[in-house]
Image 1 (cartoon, helix red, strand yellow):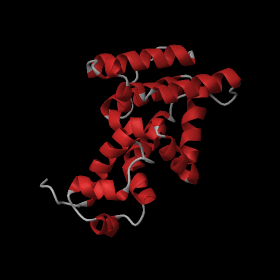
Image 2 (cartoon, rainbow, N blue to C red):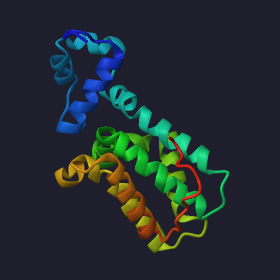
Image 3 (cartoon, rainbow, N blue to C red):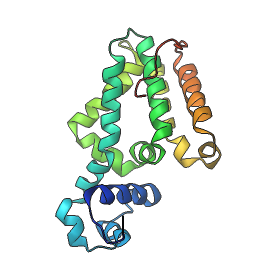
Length: 191
């Protein structure tokens, strides 16, 4: 699209890039407007607050999480958890920049936790990975896995890996970390 276009889709795409580069706290609505070559009023036309922009940027990630959870719920544990690892690995590779903002940015995490629906979604992700009777170790392992999904976006050595190799490595590492079986027969959710 030409410079000077403040269409909501373009605004959200540019905001994602700026959030990934400068963090949510380090990105102002004026920076987004300047990057798009429009006035701040043009940004306000679509989003009244920076928080609204952040929610629009993060919405695809949360929709992806919800879809994955829906897809794996028909399976028993631990297969459900293993399939969730597979689906999250796929999404993390396909949406590296978005995952870096969702999982790495403290300001984005705080906004997400203020939303009851988004907080409940993260709780469901954790609970699906740990099972119903999680001990402290299982909770920590799930937290390490979820926060580790940001690696493909922020570590240059990992970011340089081929998508298929990276996805396989994330799946393998996640399953080992969480003590999950290999479930090669089931399709990867989200594909």
